[in-house]
Image 1 (cartoon, rainbow, N blue to C red):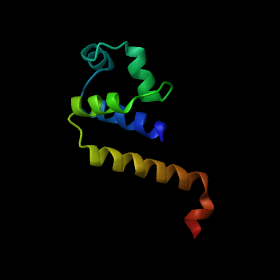
Image 2: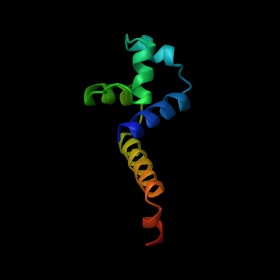
Image 3: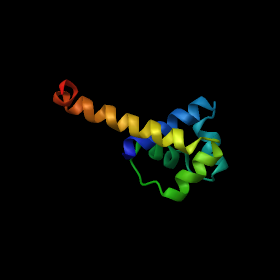
Image 4: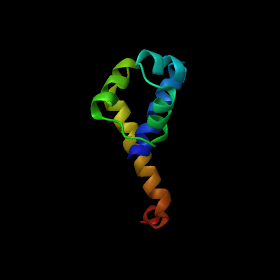
Length: 85
């Protein structure tokens, strides 16, 4: 699931025309930390996730629907047999 969360965070940042440096500066984070959030190579707390979603003015319901859709599609691609049933 973390992969999907990071991927969706990156998509939202890009859709908002925000550079990694700008977001990192606004959160007083190292750019590499934010990059790791987006690449799922470090832990992201629920509190930080909520802060980022608020910063991006993202609809949380849509965000988590997109995450679930991504996970569902990933699972189907891993188990092509399920697609036939």
